[in-house]
Length: 386
Image (cartoon, rainbow, N blue to C red; front, side):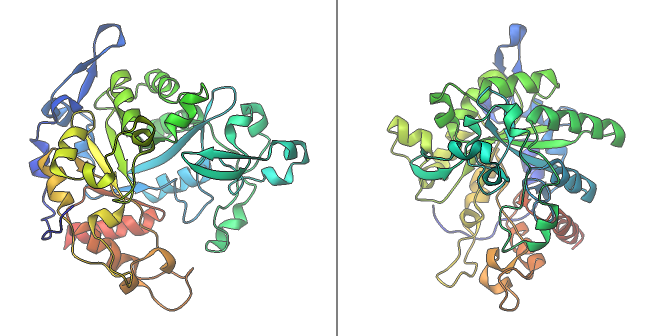
């Protein structure tokens, strides 16, 4: 990926007229997918293209203020005004989809305090990484419901530990019911951003994520091109599979430039993320997705000292292919911020998050994932009003 000049923020007007090829799908008779045009999806009532720009996406809910992926975190994010609330999905042993960032629940629940589950502690290889702990696929939903959620990074977010044990692990169906209920109460749809986690790994276990996810989306009317939901995955094949099942907007997540999607590794596909963010790679993703979710370093790399460098051409190149960009993840704490926006020496203290948001918004991104949606919303308002 080559470095380039800053792109202008006024990309949405160009995107509204862009054609996404076969990326926009609608369901035909019998539930089979048929191709539609990007213009059809863009003009549909409730389309994602009518969301505010920059769109503020609550990363795992308001995870800077409550333990992540709990109904408390989701509710606070919505109450703060987040435009979209994110869920990550993993399966239980009996095939239910639950909201956890990883299937390893050692650090996000009190499972280690349950002697009845001590024997479930094990070591597994997940997408090539060896992990020791407790995993959702070894528990039934009834068993998982006996656990309580807790803060994942207590050393950084000590205040969040106040809420340890307050909430259980939500199922995705519970979240859909919550979103439906809140949407009726507020008189507007509640947007969700839903990730399939480790889909190749789970498919090998007979716990494929895409089919049960599609079933739930259809049950709750979120399977159409103008439905208030984004689907996302780090594995392109998962989004290609979802494109055959539902028409909901899809986003391909992109990690570091030298990394390879795990499904590519298993299939012997030599391409890396660096290949996917070329114009050719972006054109390929635009055949089945409406957007990309790159790490922020793919938008503006950091130098050896941790400061922001020169923006890449990714925003311009992706927009040229009709793709929106939802990069991840902005957090307020010094430890996560680019060096020039850190304040003081405490890594857990807040730095100049507003300055960092402004730098990223200036590249023309369409939205951003943030653990602190209240901060993101103020920063987005500042950017629109400038």
